[in-house]
Picture: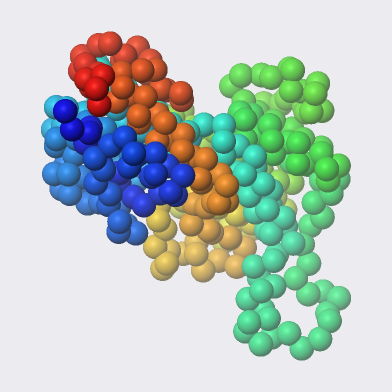
Amino acid sequence: MGKPKVYVTRLIPDQGLDLIRQFCDMTLWQDDLPPPRDVLLRETHDADGLVSLLTDSIDPELMDACPKLRVVSNMAVGFDNINVSAATERGILAGNTPGVLTETTADFAFALLMAAARRIPEGVAYVKAGKWQTWGPMLLMGPDVHHSTLGLVGLGRIGAEMAKRARGFDMRVLYYDVFRREDLEQSLGLTYAPLDDVLAQADFISIHTPLTPETHHLMNRDRFSKMKSSAILINTSRGPVVESDALLEALRSGQIAGAALDVTEPEPLPADHPLVSLPNCIIVPHIASASAATRGQMAEIAARNLIAGLKGEPLPSGLNPDALGHGRSALPKDW
């Protein structure tokens, strides 16, 4: 019996690819852009396993077009690109890469907060444009970060790590989450408040929620109207949690002072989008987890999820363990 056939939708670190090569007959999409839909359907039609990214839609159409597919391993902590319930119904195991990117993403979220507060990108652009003539007492002033108030919208793993970083700057930290975390309130010195109160009191609002029907456009015109005019928004969660048109309006009108986004709606955001040209809006290309160590670990977890699923074993980081032993059977043990 030959090796199981696997399709990998993008070039990922060798830490993961080397494991996949050892166990699988791998086809790798090497373009910088995601494989087009027709290519994805064609290349996976006889695949036993699939390593996907957030840019790949793993829906019922694809699952039904791939009758041999037994496992989908998403190299991301998020998995809104996978129809997990449809996968479970078909006995297809699905996995993601949680935990490993938590601290790296929190580092980056705090870096965005600092960059926006102290207007670092504006300063870099100012120098590059040849405008720096002398030291100026009024030049590019921004708010202090230390002793200010941070509002966390969502207190999962990354939100909690963001709170730890804020403590080093003696920030007051408020949070809102659908699940109150009294244990973290005590250990991290956090204060729970309703969402509107968090928005009204915080100098910085950092978003750390998953994308669900309830959080889609959570930050909209009404929510921006409740924020301080001096407040800055940071988003490293998912782009559609923030309504782009409403944010543009809030930034242009001075409803809020600034924003720093690692994720956008749409994504990628076109270079000619009005948000890109605003001096008080920092936009970077979804790189919060982009440290070499973290991306390597993510690739390894994705590979181990894939191989476990192909062997008919529980995934180390599985999303639907109920799919195991149902529908599509595991591959032969001599693979």
